[in-house]
Length: 270
Image 1: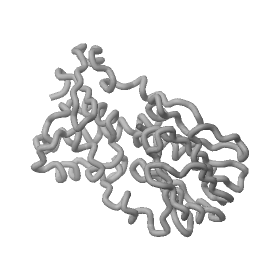
Image 2: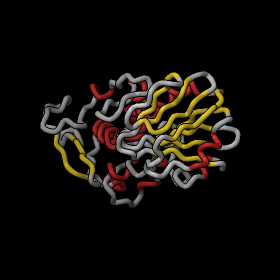
Image 3: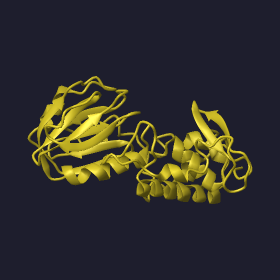
C-alpha cells in the first residue's frame, strides 16, 4: 500500500502539471472504487486547480469552489499523460486539463477513492479527526508524550493510529522504531520522554529520507513519473526476517501486531 512518502512523491510529481491549470473534462470510465465516484465530481470541469496539497495519504486538488479528494488505496497510481492516450485496464478516471495533459487514476484493486466536497477539505469526514502531520512542528516529543501517557497499546500500533499522527504506516513505523532502539511491543505509556524525543526525530528522518529517495518501491506502486523509488534499498528491518541485523548481526525477527507484519532486532530494540 502506498504510504505517506509515496503519496507525497505522487503529489510532487503531478503538482507542476496541475497547479494553475483549468480542468476541461472529467472522464469516469468506472466509478466503482472504495466509495462510488460521485456525480458531483463533474463540478470540477471548468475550474482551475489552485493547489495540489496532501493531508495524510489523501491528495487534495483545491479550486476556488471545492476540492477533489484522491486516495490511492492499496494499489492506485497516478500518471500525467497527453490527452488521447489510450486507456488500459484499470484506468478508471481521467481528469483532462487545458494544457493538453490528463491526470489518470489506475487502481487494479479499487480500494482508492475520488470524492468531491464544496466545503473546506479539513472539515470532510475523512479528514476532520486526523492527527498532526509527522513532518511538522505539531508532531513533537511533548505532543507524543501527552498522547501516550497511561496508554498500554504497543508503541507500533500507537504510531499507526491516524488520530495520533498521520502517515506513519507499517514500513516506516518498523524502520523508525529500529532506529530509535525501541521494541515494537513496548507499551506507549512506558517509554520515557527522552526516548520519545529520539523516536520523533527518527520518524521525521526516515520519512523525509524516503520522500527524497522517491518512496519505497512495492509491487503495486511506482511514482507519478513511472520511475520506482529507491528507499527499499535502505530498509534496516522491514521484510528482512531471518536475515542478520546490519548493526549487530543478530537475526531479524518478525511477529504480528494488529494484523500487520512487524520486524525488529531483539538485541538492538528494547
